[in-house]
Length: 112
Image (cartoon, rainbow, N blue to C red; front, side, top):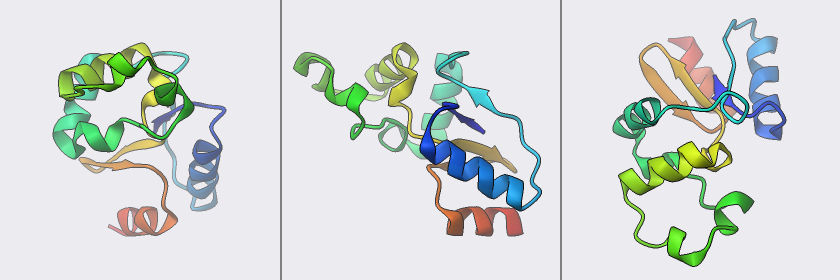
């Protein structure tokens, strides 16, 4: 699981995993960072539009020029520079990627 330790959504996802007895590794990409290569792989799996959190305060606080003309390359650069712009959590499991926390989606994923 990738995310930011202090995030409320991360806490909910971690609590859900703990309640189900699911072991996982946690990577805090705000503290440790995330590589452009990792983000490129995630973008290939789910699309940069899914990963880039445009609703968050970090994105909204960007200068207007940085918010314009976003493509995958620009989105990855923004997320590397500002990991808070990555939607949370990002869960790699069984060769699949889940972005965000929805208990029903986690139920389906871990029932496989």
